[in-house]
Image 1 (cartoon, rainbow, N blue to C red):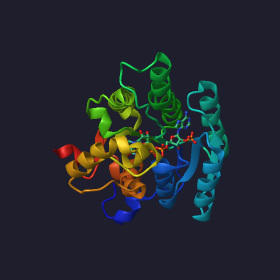
Image 2: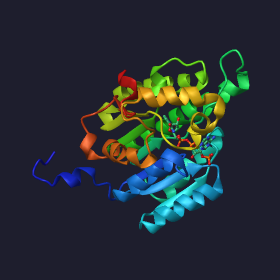
Image 3: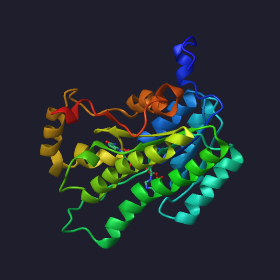
Length: 263
Ligand SMILES: NC(=O)c1ccc[n+]([C@@H]2O[C@H](COP(=O)([O-])OP(=O)(O)OC[C@H]3O[C@@H](n4cnc5c(N)ncnc54)[C@H](OP(=O)(O)O)[C@@H]3O)[C@@H](O)[C@H]2O)c1
């Protein structure tokens, strides 16, 4: 590394191509905007076309090269086709952010096979498949690359409320570690980003449903920062993990949770 160059250059993503799954709302939208703000071209993959149009307009307003591709990540051929379209339209992928995910609020006793499969397929298997596609492309070009897996602090804890989600996130952290080892010789860094509780559609239940009001109180009390995170509070972390600034970091968990997991 050239230690004489300005620090801001470390975070410059000009000329890089990024994919953000679930980039049309919530944390994914904040991540897409952050990467574009650092100079990257961005492709967002998600199902809801109206939300994707909104986010695409925000990306274009900021002067970014950006596309959105309607993709259901539980549909394997569609996911593969979207990856190929990104490379055709924007160029070879340098940064992959596996962000899309969802939870089913059912304990193991109530969970059906279909519930389990749906969560694992979207949250974990799609991340594995896209990582494989991105890593093959990055390795073939020999220019290195970055994979960021948006896991969760839920990947570190047991829970009776959303077990399939917690298992998918624990699996994602293991995927990060395995890929980090295998891809290090190709100069591809793979890290997990572990958000705590953030204000998005995903956390509507704990923030707004009366039956979870005690859980909400407990959660706030346990968080040293005393509140939910806001999506754009992940911006710095994701640019760091996508940029040269994190070149000597791989296989790690970066926790952004207002201190929730310290207790
Ligand atoms: N919010 C939090 O407190 C929190 C905490 C820890 C970790 N996380 C993680 O952060 C990530 C983003 O969560 P969020 O809070 O932003 O949730 P969100 O607001 O519910 O957004 C979820 C995103 O995932 C996409 N998605 C879900 N299923 C998909 C599918 N089958 N195919 C394609 N896209 C799909 C959604 O797009 P479409 O519906 O349009 O497809 C949407 O963009 C998730 O992996 C979540 O586990 C969130």
